[in-house]
Amino acid sequence: MKRTVLSCAAMFAAAAAALSTEEARQLREEALRFDAVAANLAVDDLSKNPSYDATAHCAAVKALAARKEWVAAHLADASDPAAEEAAALVRGFRAALLANPLLDPDRILCVRRNFTNPIWPRADKPGGSDFPYTKRAFSRKLGLLGLNAHNHMDLDRIGFTNDIAVISSLRGTPSISTLYRPPDTSIVRDLDLDFDASRILFTSYRGTNNLLGVYEIMVPGAEQEKVLGAKCFVLGAELKCQDLRESNAPSTKHQAPSTEHQAPFIAVALPPADTWPFPWYNRPYEPQTGYWTSFDDLKQLAAGGSKPTVVIVPMTEGHLVQPLFPHLKHTKRFYMRPGVRVRVFW
Image 1 (cartoon, rainbow, N blue to C red):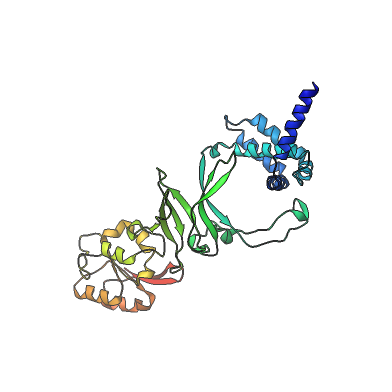
Image 2: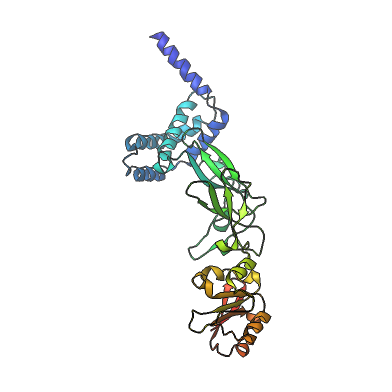
C-alpha cells in the first residue's frame, strides 16, 4: 500500500513538473477571463446537440466557476504543487467549449489579425492590474463593418497586420500556420474556399483608387496569387475597364447597335476609373451596353446615326448630351460611388 501511494505521488509530481511557465501563464489568463454566466449559456446551447456530452461538460464549467480564484492563485507559479490540479480545471472548461461539433474538422481556415494599439492594464478590469489588457479595437479598426448600413467602402484599407491562416489540432496541441500574407499592411478578409479546397478567394487592397479587389490563391502554394480579370466582375480597383469595353462594345469602337425594335442601347462614356461598379449592376443589359472613355466618342456615335436609349457621362459634360441626342428627354444626377458623380440621360 505504501509503495502504491509513493508511486502515485511520484506520478503527480512528474505531471506537475511537466507544466511549463508559459503554459501556466496562458492557463491563468484563461482562468481570469472566465465568465461563469457566459460559459453556462454556451454549454446550455451546445447541450441541444445529442452528440455533446452535456453532463461532463456542465460539471467542468461548474468546477472552474467554484474555484476560479483558487485556480488563478496556484497558476501564478508553474512549480506550485497544486498548479497541475488548477490547470486541469481550466483544461476541462476549455474542452467543454471546444467540444462544439462545428469545430470537428481537423483544419480551420481563418483570418488572423493582430493589433498594436496598447491599452495599459486597469485595476477595474477582471484579473486586476496585472492582467494584460494590452489591445483594443472595434469596427473599422478590426477590419469589420460597424453598422448594417455600411459596406466595403467604409472599411479601412491599410494599417493591418493580418494573414490567411490554418488552425490545426485545436483540441490537442493547437498550431496555426500562415497560408498567405499580403506584401504590405493591406486588409485581408471575406474568405471563400472553393468546393475542393484547392483555391481561396479573398478581398484585399493594392493601393489603387482606394478601391478593394478580389484575389485568388491556390492551396497549397500561396505564392500563386493573381487578380481576377474584369470579366469576373472584380470588386474594386483591379477592375480592368479596358477589358470590359472590349467585351461589351460593338465590333468597331464607334458603331453601336440600333435601338429600334431591340433592347435598350446604353452608352457609357466615363473615365475608366469612374466606371465601377456600374458593370456589376448592369449585368442583365451587358449585351446592349457600350463603354467609351470620352465625350468625343459620343459625338462620333451621334454622327453615325446611333440613338442610345440611355447615356451616362461625367457631371461636367452633362450639358452637352441633349444637344447631341435630342431624343433623350429626361436626366438625373447620382453618385456612381462615393466621390464619383455622374449624369444619366434617357
